[in-house]
Image (cartoon, rainbow, N blue to C red; front, side, top):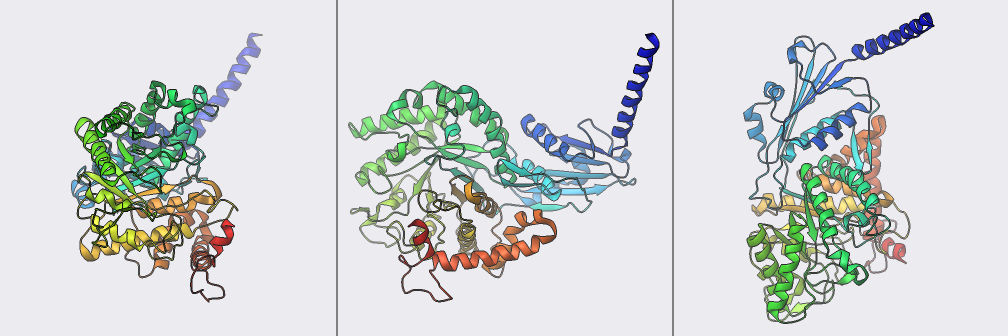
Length: 569
């Protein structure tokens, strides 16, 4: 019996030795983070690196000069490794929120890939969390160079093998300081329940809410940082049937968990709540009852609630709905009340949408665009306190100059004009859309990359105007409506365009090609063909859906004479 046990032990020992030998024969991959990178982010990064295999991965320090050929160190942030490759002048050259990646080799052929970045400028973006997000951008840019992709938030692309290179060098800086994301939870999207504090089966389903907190939310945050974003806002809902939860402490506690996790990823999480807007079950600050002072007290109580929930900034809406509004002077007093109280009591910034709807006017106010009375009601924030930031909003896939027979408009050039009239006066952030939903683009599961064209056109146009005039907007807060029907395509292109709109390219087609490379590179040998096909397909789609052209001939008016009209029925 003893001999049989001894033989079994010898077989096990031989197997263990062989396994150790195989592990030891793998090249070494040392991953080093400085202390500013949150543990949750570190662990996710290590998990992604382990999936392809092929390396013996460790976080234990190893002297760089002892690395052999094929061994690699990835160093993130201000570490002794990074100091070997990245100088202070390198970091100074990329400015606030920029990052540097440098690769060097030792005499044995060992490779060091270092990434580091700078803190953003809080004077340029006042919805920030105190995290060096640029370091995380550098982490994910290194992954991009290895073949990773972050297109659909729930489905990252993982390469089969890791192929490091000594040419992994880059320096990048953002075009705009505000690169934000609006997830429109007034629609029944993938995470609408989660973002309203609900589990999958209601407010009491804490288990599934925690599951989404620990699985889905980190993946979405990863998508945001991988695509160079720094903020996200969500729409809070309520209804009489669940008001006790809507304004209660359980919901607040869940939001605190959300905001704590988003801060670890360097993403500011804001609440989008109307001041008095009540459409689509919106959570609002005042019902308009009582005296103005009582209404302001209602508003302040709601700001107290949002601050206690941990939100990093407040985004809001004007009017009772997109198409109805209270007295203009009362609305203006409400705007000032929210903005001033949030800033003075909690040092939180307030942002307000400027909608594209038409037919509402303030007869006693001069319109900042036309310079005469009456004023478009949506432009009322032009008269608010100066620290109220504005989000000029366009809808659907139309660019600023496209014919746009929607919301009572013929095009959106007036919003472009308003944006640059206000930009010298207050923080102004473009608020376009990469998908609309409702009955506009969900009736048939069509692939609509024309959305990406619209947003690239607008950001290219805005950046060119900035270069020409020296008047700058602060960036983008893009409206998205989930990830179905390949919405993720336009989402990803639009997000990255706020970092670099490629506006100096000779043509819009060239801008699209440069922008699409991030996605098409994942298709290997056919990436160039796919890129060219996308540009051609989008041009055809724009001609047919937006311009109403058939066989190259456009109608005198596009109203009801375009493919979009047929898509909507």
